[in-house]
Length: 304
Image 1: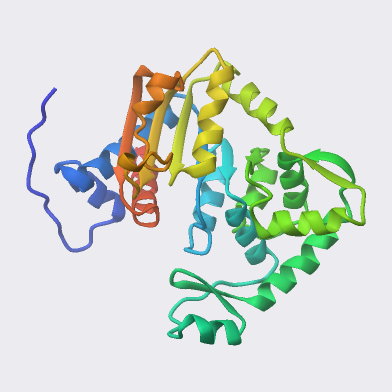
Image 2: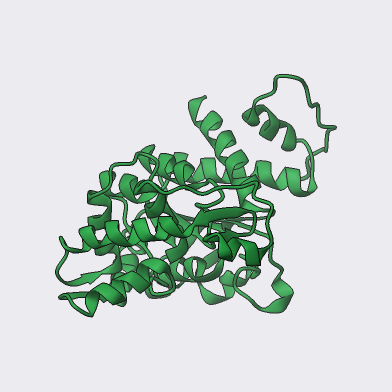
């Protein structure tokens, strides 16, 4: 059904939610952001189990608390993350910080003990703090555990309300980290396990994910970026009799190069991960720009 495009009316004093409504009058990227907000709202009002995939290193960019708030408010029910996001979430929960506005070349940063993530920075000392604190948590965990079990136990020992790992523990939201070993957290788990009886089972969580996708509830997926979190969420449907009824992807990648981060959601129809009747939306934008706007629009929609 066609809809007439109207000029955007941008006024002084508008809220983010007001801006989203104006975006809905237009097309291209702005129209897609408004469509994404509507899709996410439908997931929540329709009783979906919402799976959130966190690619890359979004926590250093400042998105960690927003994810924690979504978990706290029942707007996300399953999290699949890179090890980097978990590591940086824990660093902040343990008292470390990320910085911006440092104008140095990378050789100077190395000499000063600063590590760069595009235009965000973190001190080497924060990783020393992380190492000491995570060892204290590891001392409370023994035997053979899955990665999601380990995330739950780590969350149990945190106090920061800004930590999405802490909020996931409080709300009983599972956190899966399928590429767990590809992170500083995975590295320190390996080092600790050399001298202690701790084994992390990476395969067990596949069964847990399949249970979640097969539970009988409608399912919706939100992908910030793509990569391993996107595939781990989607592949669970291969062992389920269901498909995702909704899928939202925010990416800057392109499909022509064959990578999953750029793969269209429509491509997943051929795999049986979504159906031809699923509601799909791809927003080509930086997730640190688009997702906060989308969340603002969704929160406003839910209050009406």
